[in-house]
Image: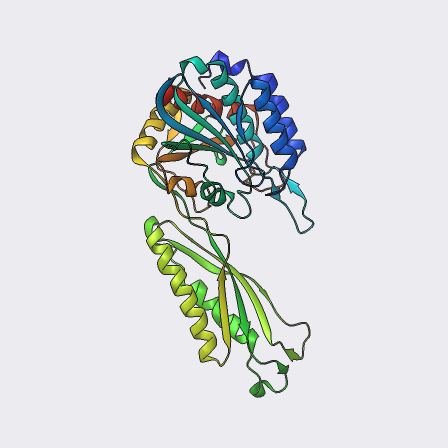
Length: 376
């Protein structure tokens, strides 16, 4: 691990920032304390161009150098994970570490603003876990005024050890398209099914068909994870319900496959219900496109990562999803995975997931190296 002294000197403040975020977890679009803290910290550093009216609780700080150059965006998500049906939130995905890294970068860049040739945008984004806050940040102009040339994000990642970084060209994270299905039939006495249109039976048929549509044991670019994840209908033993509600999700590693599968899901669900005398509706919910890292930027960050850690993985991709994909649809850049696994493995969103000191130091160093390459 090769960390510069300028970053090591920030460790006491990193600890304070991380502790604040950890102790004040807030769900998407409710990151009020988080947003206020970030704004206050940026103002303490000397940032004047701070936009808190971009979207919901989002914050964008802009720092312009004395000379012309590219506009580079660094992004952190802000929201905590909603852990259960009570609405309890906890930072079990690492967003507390991401915000700490970006604030640390903010401090270093402000202290070296006379060296900057171009513009830096530091974007703290709400609602990554819920309704794809990136989509609305982009829609409301996060990539404009000035126009962003490249975008970078870090995600601490439990699949890798603390001294590892993963950065791959091309597809790195899958699309995510959750959907609701409503099956309509004709309820009645379970002793007289011939007089009913059995919604439970239709839902079972749909569930099986969706599972059979999945493409799992194929090459990555053709993969499609599809299925029903929840079925709710009926309340008693001897009544066939009028309506059954279903939930499911589709994930793919290719946007063309994604488009094809979404169309096929709708056609299959509607066709099965119709042939059995019922009716079914499919409603797609929050949509996350495939996250695709651009070639030039990925190769550059791979070289940067090799300066920071000894182990750089260049072929890793995952079927989890990230709304950073919305930025990468518009500008080149990449998602960087910084390992955070210690002696005991806890996956993201697990009750016991936490991030230690080393990934924050490494992440800050990587962001700083990117800033130096493009802006200094």
